[in-house]
Image (cartoon, rainbow, N blue to C red):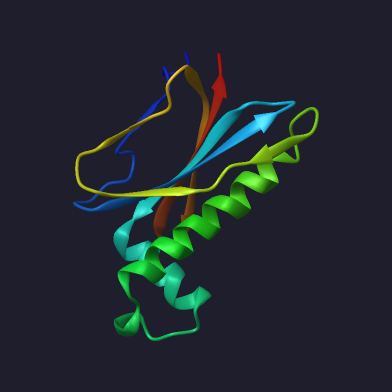
Length: 126
């Protein structure tokens, strides 16, 4: 049974980060990408070809926003009709819930990247 439009800390750990991008057009909804802050820092180090210790908070946010944008674009292209992506947003912290009003969570997929979970959730507008 679908969860009504929210994602609540599916990634274990004290600190998580979530990117979210909306999709509007032939298909309307949103895509969320959630992972641990440690994994996000490693993604940023890879993306910016930098040492892990040298990665800034802004680079972590940029990396998660871009990962969310790429994931959202790939999913958008599988949906019916022509749609466009919004600007990705990033939320970071502990114990938070991401809500997408007037949607249902259709699917939540968990991927492992270097033993770290990355959760992709697909929301469809009601």
